[in-house]
Length: 238
Image 1 (cartoon, rainbow, N blue to C red):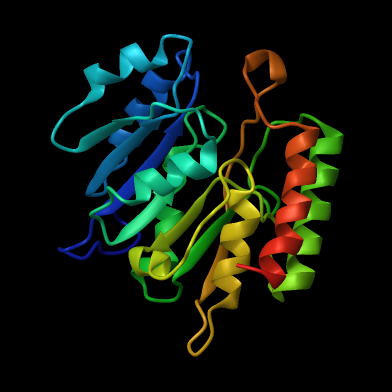
Image 2 (tube, rainbow, N blue to C red; image 1 turned 90 degrees about the horizontal axis):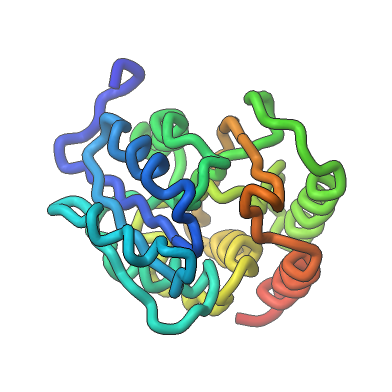
C-alpha cells in the first residue's frame, strides 16, 4: 500500500446495502474495485423499484456477491443479511451512493491492520474536506452523537457515520435487531457493552460529499427520532 504492509491472509468484505441507487451504483462499484486491497463485495438489494435491481446482475463475478431481498426492510436488515455472506476477516460498510469515498479505505483500515483497533469509525467532523449542506442535519447528528456518548462512555465525533470498519469477530454474539437507520446507534451501543476485554475503538477523518434530497438522500426527521429511541433502548435492553 505504501503506507503499511497488508498481511498475506487479509481480505476485506465490503457490504453495500442498495435501495433505488440506479444513478450511482455503477460509479460506486468502480471506485470500490479500484482500491488496491484484497476484497470481496456483497451487494444487498432491498427490493429496489427504480431499475437498480435489474442492473445488478451485470456486476456479479468471483469477488462480487449479490443478494436480492424479496421484502423491503431497510438498511439495518440488509446489513444483517450481508454480514452472513462475509468471508473476509475485516468488514466495512459502504453506502451505495457517492457520499463516502472508497479512497479512504487505506486510512480506515490502518489502525486494524496495525493491531491498534478492533473497530474504526470514519468521522466527517475531524478535519477532512466535505460538502457544505444542511445545518440542521449537522446539529441533529452531533446531538445524537453526544447522547450516544453519554450512554456508551465513548467519545466519538460521528456516531451516525456510514463508515464503520471492524474485525469479523466483533459480530460474534452480537444480536442486531434494527431494520432501518437505527443500526448506527444499535451497533455503537453493542460494541461499547463488550468488556474484558473491551473492543478497541478508533476514529479517523474521512471526506464527505453529502447528497441533497433532490439527488436521492433518504434519511429524514423520522429517522432522527428513531435513532434517539435506539440510543436509549440499546443502552438498557438488548
